[in-house]
Image (cartoon, rainbow, N blue to C red; front, side, top):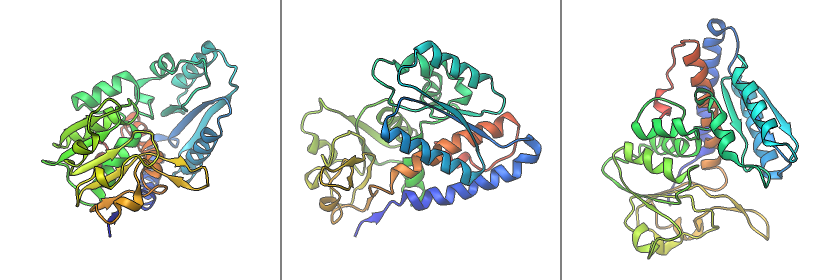
Length: 293
């Protein structure tokens, strides 16, 4: 039976640490941390994600700000909204909820966010900080994966890691974080030849390809650690990830479930980035450095 990498349980533990940090620092700071989520349009999945983030903020003591703008909003309107949040002294973290409606380019909007308020860790400057090993907000999903591994005593140092997927949201920063943890890292993608031969070499396999159950038993070596970043709704109902969990369960040493694995940790790391930004801004002591890979 594979070890379950339970992101839901770990997220609950980390929320307690964040709530304590907020309680400890509020008197000195004079206010709680603030997270602003800017949502554009009416994508149903985005509505669920934003609601989950607002609930998580409430549990930790982070104040929620932001706005819900119509899909017809012009880029200049969104830029003005971001600039207003940059200037708002109550806001420590800003998140632009993706995907945006068709016709809106996320690149200049992400670039307009104050890098020190970049709660999602996607600003060019913060990706550069990650590359150079400098302090700054980290991409939430890969940072959550690193926290899950660490919580189970899984040390990437000296191990062979394979990341399937090369998006700037997950795959690229995931590879950088594993490399910083002294793993030997390979990034696979849609043009990779003989993917099973490559992934079978992995001690740690992180799958963020966006294709339902594409990784099966033929892709893994016995005893591997597998982290499934994907989440998809089956036509017949229910959810699945990028790996075929039923096939992998008897083979691997550890496996993250879908749901209840990486997803809850992504939301928690958004709060980590926000609380850390608040702590730095008000020169508060904290014990959260272990959560920043």
